[in-house]
Length: 215
Image (cartoon, rainbow, N blue to C red; front, side, top):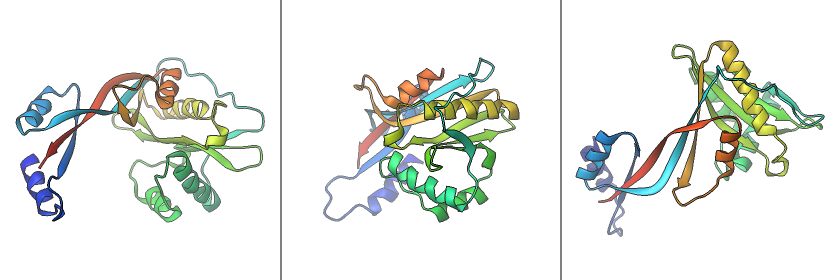
């Protein structure tokens, strides 16, 4: 597969480009795939995605939001519009339109509206969000994405969203929940997202490193 991908990418290489970089991701525990990558001339970078796991049999605290704030499921078109706009603000430019969001709600096989959670501020506007996904067959949940408006951070909103998501997943029969976070490097000492994950008892189960090869 790598040989085929490299061949396809070379065919679309810009005419003025001397080299063309191909990127793949390999988990730090996948020694067989690391060996394949090395034999094909790939080199591991220091950029990786974190993967965390949390056992839902452990105690899950009840949510404790600041006065006037409310956790609820997303409901109507106004919510969808606010949620889409907040995604771009919280995710540093990653954009999703209301129409795209509605398509996801209608077509994603494991989407559940009762697990699509938001925090409403006292004035009613959505200021934080967290979507949980439930795989009933494997009894696992996944949080993706999670975000908060910069003006409302450090108030425990996203932490309480994670707790509420865990409680709802556990009620549905999930035994484990996972979370991921990309764009990290080995040189970083702290990261707010990792601090949040650790505060709700996620522990790292793997790093998915980016590998590169110049074609």
